[in-house]
Image 1 (tube, rainbow, N blue to C red):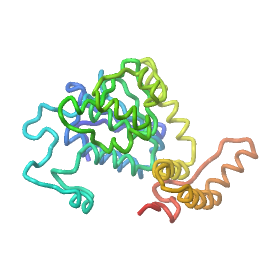
Image 2: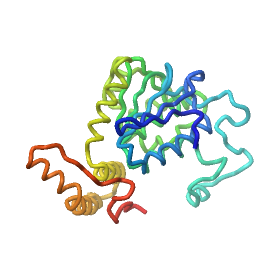
Image 3: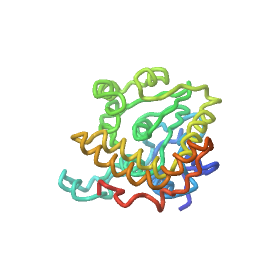
Image 4: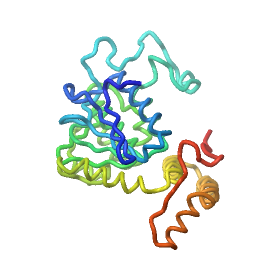
Length: 287
């Protein structure tokens, strides 16, 4: 697939995924949604990719949905009358399923860690897609806003699931109710971003973190990512114990042996497993 709204660059096991509509402040379109879903699915089983850094071209990260398009700006089919049962019975209903949600669900399923490098304005879907990333790093110029109530709509992109897990329900609701734009320092203070960086060092610092991750076992990282996201919401710690036990059992016979040997021999490990082909048989346990 050729991308019209993205750049997909892989170097040193790091995928840089650039939202690339700088003339429109990287505003989100249905086409960008389709390309992002494809890119995250592609990266998930790309053994050349160990970590993903997402950023925006130009001065913005993503200025929200492109509201200049004709018709329903969200790409929805107003002739339909969908119900909750319809949604529960289908993975996707064309013209109904939220395009931002399709992107964040593809991020959720991805085997590779995702780092958001927020280089500028990130509002609407530009903010909610960040909530589905594992780690967020912000430029001093970043401005973030969950602005949906200002235009009479509601949060999307599964953010009612992701955002409260990051900042708590009260803070999530305050940001959504007010629709206020807040800066990088507030985002850090409230726990939405890990750190604040100069515009010049943001990507370099994000790559340093990504390179650290890339040195680890791709299978153990993929397992840990899904374990944290899925089991943190499990109804009982026994659910986590079950998967923890299986993960350690199988990893101890694979990359775990190399990890222990490298520790004892005081050398860097040489992990051989691939997330595309060497995931243990119990994975994915949730299906």
